[in-house]
Image (cartoon, rainbow, N blue to C red; front, side, top):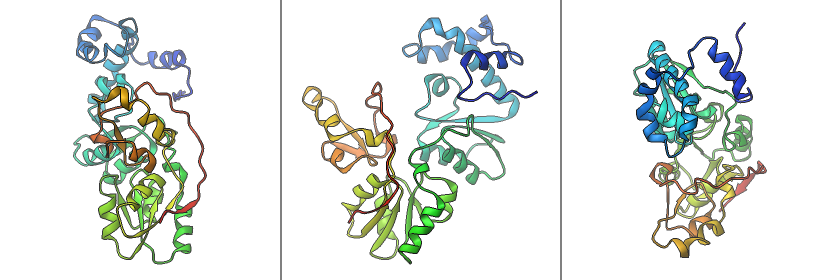
Length: 290
C-alpha cells in the first residue's frame, strides 16, 4: 500500500514511512557527505539537530541522480532545502528562466503551485513534480480565469496585463504577462490608453504613478507584503541610518514613500527575517486606481 506524506503528516510518522525504504541513520558516510552543507547552515540549524536532517539530505541527493531529477527551490525555502538539496535557487522569475535550461528529465519544484505550472508550460516534455500540490500563493488564488473573463466583458477591448505569479488558467485568458521589473514597460507597450492590470493591486498602483495610462486592477495582494506598513519601514530608520531599506514593487505605495529603494525581489537584501507575518484575507474586487 502506498502511503502519502504531505505537510499535514506528523513528522515522526513521515520519517517512519520513509525509513521503510531508506536508511535514515546518521552514519559516518552520511556525515562526510553532508559536512559541507552543515558548514553553510550551522548558524541556522543547531548541531544537535543535524543527525536528524543529514540522512534526509543525503538520500534525496542520491535519489536525484537515480531518477535524473533536478530540484528548483524558491528563495523562501528552509535552509535544509535551500543549501542541502537544491540545484537551482532563485525567485519565481529566475526559476522559470532556469527551468528552460535544465537537462534532466524530471523537475522537482520546491515552491508554490503556479511555479510548478510555469515549469511544466516551459518544459511540456518533462515530468514536473511539486512536493505538496496544496502549496499555494495568496496572490495567485485571489483571482480565477472566470474573474478575468468577467473583467473583459465589463471592459471590452481593454488589454489585460497579468503578473506572472498567477495560475496557468489565468495566464491563458490574458493578453500578456509581466514581471515586477518590466511591468511599466509592458503597460506602456500595449495599445490603448486604458489597461487592466491584475491581480496585484499594489504593483498596479505603483505602476499607475509612472504612466499616463488609466489602470484598472483587482484587489489581490500577497498576504505577507500587505502586512508591512509604512510605519514598519520608517520607525527603525533613525536607528539604522547606516542600512538600506529595500521595498518590493508589490508593497503599498505608502510603504514605497518611506523606502529608499524598491524593485524586483532578487535585487533585495533579505530584511525582517524574524518578523512574523499575520495572514489576512482580502476582498477580491476590481479597483480603478487612476
